[in-house]
Length: 223
Image (cartoon, rainbow, N blue to C red; front, side, top):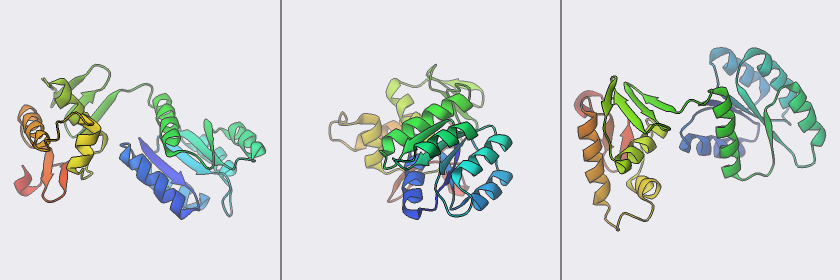
């Protein structure tokens, strides 16, 4: 999803943006309603995460404006004692709310739930000419089917959920293998080789020397 986080608390905005980004979303930020309105004019979003209490125009007023101009999910961030804010926000068109302080895992779960509604249940991940259907466990490259083993499928899905991000070896091993890789970090290099061979050229999983790997468009010698 493409998500806009709107909050005047810079530290919270950074934390939410990082968590959503690691969950595979494309995230923009705005520090107030005026900046959010400008960004919403320039781009289409799948989800807005709005703080209710902001200087100037508050999140409830902004919620009403966004509901009238974009077909996107809206998640409000409210104070624990702000029952009236939550009622007004829902009346203004918000889909859900989350009370501060909140667990980041709950925010991610609520964001995914709203995304499923706005994306009408799509289960496809797409990058370049590569498509992965999470429900059917099918992969195609340029329209041609690619046969992957279950572990190869999980590996590619993790990269496709984090496009263009540099992923460290330990991140991938933890997420795809958990503790079931026998302590041998070379298993990742081996499976990267398997997936690259099956996907063919040009190569999409790039080695970032000294850091890890990234799913990105080839450039120059990367192909």
